Amino acid sequence: MTSLRVLRTPISALCLVAMLGATGFAQAAPVIRPLAYTRVTLPNGLVVLLNEDRSAPLVAVDIWYKTGSKDETVGHSGLAHLCEHLMDEGSPNVKGTQKQLVQSVGGTSRHWAETFRDYTRYYETVPSNELETVLWMESDRMAAPLAAATAEQVIGSRAVIRQERLQQRENPVFGLANGYTITELYGAGSPYSHDPLGPMDDLEHATLDDARQFCRPYYVPNNAVLSLSGDFDTRAATHLVERYFAPIARGVVPAHPSIPDPTRAAEARYVLEDARARQPVLRIVWPTVGFASRDKIALNALASVLVTGRGGRLGKTLIDDRQLATSVAADNFDDPLGGLFQIEVVPRGNASLTTIEQVVDSVLASVSQSPPTARELRRFANANVLTSITKLQTREARADTLAQGAMWANDPADYAKQVDLGTRLTSENVIRVARTYLGVGRLVISMIPAGKRELISKPELPVTVLAPLAARVSP
Image 1 (cartoon, one colour):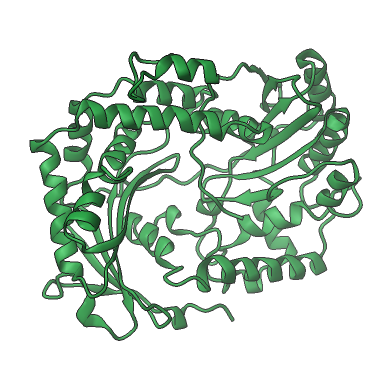
Image 2 (tube, one colour; image 1 turned 45 degrees about the vertical axis):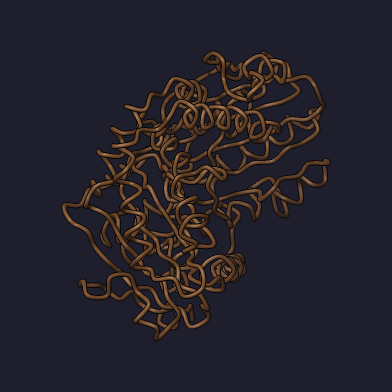
């Protein structure tokens, strides 16, 4: 499974009321209080984060391993995702799947496990009296990764992954666009071009020995973060973690590949066709910054200025004023080692993608001449803080957020600092990131119904045609 999260810290409803005036805008910069946590590092290198919350008898257990599809090599794609599935199929002392064990003690999870380019995570929420059971389970599979896996389980896991690719990449219209965007932004040879749900060619021939050889070096305590949130005594929970995880030996973790700087000197233009599409889509993408960069929050604010609510500048111009589009989105996405700023527009009727691109460029250029107003910045800050309340209501989200900060920024509370920074942004901050990152080095992707080349934006310019879906379908 794959997903994208931006998780923030919660504040109390009373604090929110005090922060907002009668107009709904901030009267003073709020102080974002991070989640309380205890950090412990075991002698074997395992980082442990404990967020004690006794309000309900539940505990979320979340373990992150610093390995994902970017660690794969040419000819061996898909192994990180295969490892995730095989890790759920049992361990030396757990018969049956991990999911079955957790459910048998009253636990649950949204997805159980997920694989991304930079990390793989396993998570569940259980009644607090079953915390020891889950810690034993997680330590058992860390101590001997894939020791109980079989060749038959490889076949079954491969079939499940094939189905996930169909559902998430091949069946949706323009479902391959995100993978192409990353590949073209970073370059076909970049580790970030490896999609956790990429083509199945390599995985169809992968063996159990291939999976074990890839997985084992990464599934070691000094390459992991264990995060707990919920109903436990911190001292007692620490003793349990030490009991089950401290005996696991450190490992020699392979060097993670470096990610080349995706900065481009010039624009590159692409066409992606899909025979099932009935409407074209225009996507424009710029390389930006990674998770821990303080420029990230200003880029998020720029996206808000462009599209948030009825007053978003780009949305208002394209949808209300010019009636050229039915949908306009602007987002800043961040990975640990890089990010991208993306604008995507769905045209209204037969509106020209060329005209839409010209309007986008005009609105972006106007940001410098007409800086974000105090009202626009307050709107972003307030929405950002509100998101922090709603995103961290579950123990799973709290454990996950702390683990993410620890692994990507070496600071479990980094999310709180980012949100607090959002309350202190100035128009100059936003103008600077727009000038710095939204320059000429961008990708312009015209996504069109197959055979409708006349619909692409600025057809007179050189363009690269991306492989259509038919050439990418898994065997």
